[in-house]
Image 1 (tube, helix red, strand yellow):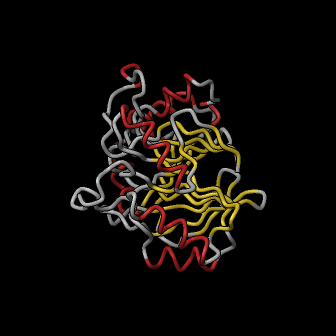
Image 2 (spheres, helix red, strand yellow):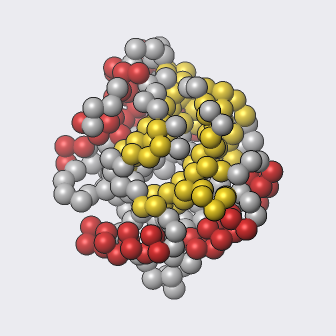
Length: 260
């Protein structure tokens, strides 16, 4: 699986079009898998993918973790629909599916099929095998995903602090992960400010997650832990990279490419 990170910013990102993104500004959450699958639809997703030369007309499937505005904007979805060569399958939490479908016109619905997703659903789409898992996030309808292809397993766990009990049970039962994308929203925050840290990981939980995943066999010693969804200001970027690397995480950034 080839991953292209289209947006690695945390919950403090500004929801502006791609043309307004300058300097070290981090875009809202989005990722491309193997040129045909999009995960989360931050507002700049389509424009930035186009800017990077991705084949945006070949998207077959889109997966949403939840519909907080830094993970889903209709504007980004319409961008992909505008160039799609085939009807796109959009997979999203069950509670959001009807609302998204109702927000689209009849013409738009001819280009996309909205599928409701429940935790523990398993299916195949876009050349991947998928398992949806419940997330420990402020939005109780948030789901995380395990994507599998060619014997490789990728965990996508953005927006959530630690693991939901049922999520952990299923991760523990499965084969070890080859890579895991972990929420690192407040890696540069003072850990005493837990009132602000609700629903996201921080510099206290990140080392514990690393150790727990390895100790239980969910992650092997060579499993790559990728950190994303970060909220530091641009002048904190150097400190953010340093802390994550010291904790054994691979920092991501907008435009970052990784092969699982």
